[in-house]
Length: 229
Image (cartoon, rainbow, N blue to C red; front, side, top):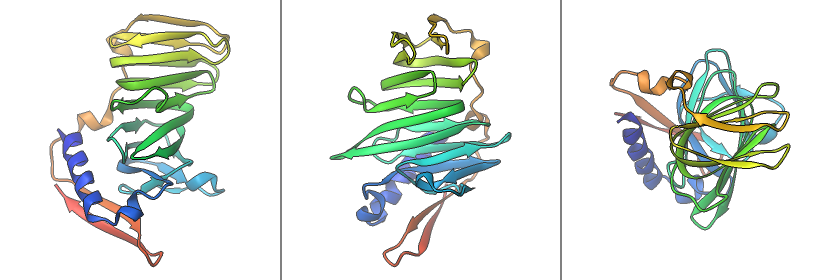
């Protein structure tokens, strides 16, 4: 319910803002939730800074969460979302083609949940040191560790899961789990419900919330809009 409300609010805000501000080529997503320690490094700059709820994210921004960190982001073209859990390091990239954004997410370590709207082949890809997950439209969890490998849990839809060492691929459908290891092993099994990570946003109570969207105005100054819902 909350995600639906946030999505409606977000698109309402876009209609209020100058289209050139929000849909300029490098602007690809916005943070809708931030908890704990979460930092962003804009476009591979040297310095990380605190990520705020409502921050508009750009191509090649890097996000890092601490021990208690969590953030949710939504892509501005199709409402696809990423929920990034604690101790994760992620880079988001996007290439605009007409009204769509071809998205590629690089995750060095950590855990995320991706809920992806219908895409054309290759429009949403998550890459780790061990694997590549290519998505058309689905809901899944992906955990990666450079030593232990990758665990992909598909909740709905289908994910093409490729081991980068061997090039071997499998299709992981809803209810199944794929395992990809640094030694090249790739396997699939029925999901054990106990292995599904907890989604922090689903445990929150239905209370009044605020969403402040930050953007850069024509004069280069930071501006914001506050929405209560």
